[in-house]
Length: 302
Image 1 (cartoon, rainbow, N blue to C red):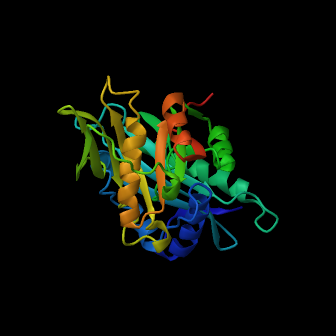
Image 2: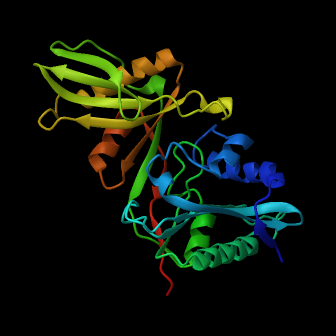
Image 3: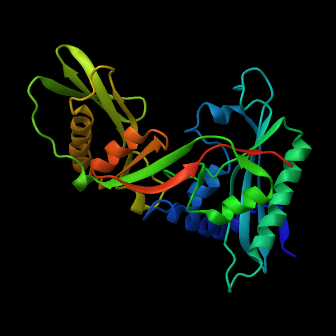
């Protein structure tokens, strides 16, 4: 039988190997350092709203033959009025990973199920109002439950978690394949600081027509250098009434020109799967689909 126990600092290298195996299946060429994984087990300053609501954090691992083959990170949110309604008194499996069964790793599914039972037992001890699950690893574009993790999906479903939220499409493009910047009479673009990165705002006839924001700070210093040439679209907004003027491609071209100066060679984007127009626009502009990810899983025992 696998041993389930709290995470120890001595597990850090094996846990990082396990985390990176799952990241690599979602985003090509991205991995995180041991320091990134350890930091993610504590406070998460980038989640400046929801992280402040967390009152307890627990990380559990399943060890088999002295090797960490499964791990889960749990959060307990406070029950007071400052916490958002959906999160209030909620327990969350923030992420849950394990190696798929293989000839050289027999029994990992059993280890995952034993670990999942321990995670649910911890949530029960917390006596939370609702139980959620996610797959939010500390890497860009790894959130929800990516379709490229069928073994994790099966483990959640065996434990009576059900998908109750949206599905998003995760896309990626080589910056070299994005539209090229061409002058357009009557339209100017200003560069400013945005909410989710550097903002490029298109103006015409004295009014804002739309903007795009790109975040080039995905590779924090503690992450591996292989992530430094990666950015994502934080926002892409077109002012109502300005569609049909090719503004989306114009803004993508403006952002691409800036990203080339930054030395960024790949750009990520995220869209709701049911927004076919937005997905099709990106596909026609040089993006390709990486995966789909199902957000918000809720524990609903039969």
